Image (tube, rainbow over the protein chains, first blue to last red):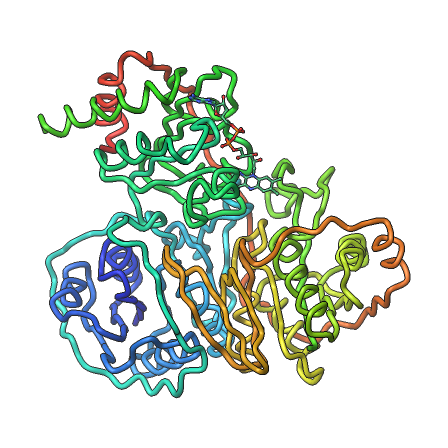
Length: 312
Length: 246
Ligand SMILES: Cc1cc2nc3c(=O)[nH]c(=O)nc-3n(C[C@H](O)[C@H](O)[C@H](O)COP(=O)(O)OP(=O)(O)OC[C@H]3O[C@@H](n4cnc5c(N)ncnc54)[C@H](O)[C@@H]3O)c2cc1C
């Protein structure tokens, strides 16, 4: 079976792209399609995870969704792909639905696993409070894969990088400016996350959260009241009305663990909760709990992490 | 300006999530439905603000059963002028989007707004599918929207950052936090909503591209292991040796 994987190189090509290619490889022969200013060496790396061919249109920069949809449609026609895989990020959330309509192909949005024996695919529903099994009723399928759902596998293969003409038409949505946080680890992609809530009392106290994040190499997140009060930027807000994440490690300090907060983080592999209140509901969802004052516990944990890193 | 706002219902955020019929159906027993928060707080309120400054109309559309009319009346109470209910079970995103696109096709809406996603299926698919069905441009996750003649200027969430974009009308926009402030309907709004037009139209014939065959709950967590606040070395060692996450 021919599988097409769309990769965007906006943040460079990293773990999520390797996951999507690994996923595609388990289903069939993988061609990657991408566009814009991406480095050939970075693209070739996708071969190690199972892509056999990479199609790139370097002249197509700042493409809008309609252009990307046409590009992927053209690549699917050229390769005869019956399954198209996306990384479930902001770009996929726009392009995959359009492509679904254009190709009349069923879309599995937010897949968290490979197809089961009966061909159904698991997705997160009810903000991570349950899983649903999706059956695609069409011959062509589109699967948008949630980050951190599958382990990337490097098999040391290689891929030919070929230039490709997207034939994508004109841009209708004009990009005037893009402001990307510098140097930060994007939260949806992070393996390790340190998060804090109203228990931290004010924005001036976030230094101890950032110190721990830095020692671990983690991204930072927060509860909704914290971003509502502008203590932290909106893109750090996790939960039912923020973003849903599923890192390997989620450390929550000074967060009570309301059901709407848990909805966005209960897919995390390991949860550590630090709270002064032994009755805080979050402890019921935690793997490790520390009853204590975040102002004392966080700096101690940071020191312990530094000591561990120095000796490993 | 002629604005269409897509509204869906979703279970109240504190609802207990359970399934019936051999885990193939969401258990609606005792579930309170609300207007999907993104649709209400951001899409609908921004549409009303635009109408208040630029004039025009705000129509809301939902694909749903007669039982969903309570949710529709709430949206009317907040201030929409009229409502349309497409009489069908919103089976999947494609089915729902094509129903709305079929309704909107020849009505001449300048702007179609939705919330960024529903909090039950979190698919964020419907708005993009409406846009493709109507061959319109689409801006998702917009946090700011201003109208300048026949152009929209928007800010949107983009891969952890913010992007400023410009697009000509007509267009489809999905709305995220920042777009507007939640409005609580007042008594006058609630009274007025009772007599505002609510038109029910039959569903178009549309295929289901996907179906949900069953649901499962996440595995129960094993009991939490408590660690003394004075022993962070132990926590680090457990994270390394037992959880294997660092
Ligand atoms: C429709 C709806 C959607 C929502 N969506 C979201 C969402 O997406 N995300 C979200 O997070 N919330 C959401 N909420 C809000 C949610 O219900 C909670 O109000 C919120 O998560 C609470 O945030 P918090 O835990 O930071 O604050 P609080 O509930 O105030 O908890 C603070 C915690 O800090 C502890 N604490 C205090 N001092 C210290 C200290 N020195 N050291 C350690 N611990 C300390 C306290 O014991 C307490 O447990 C939503 C609510 C609604 C109604």
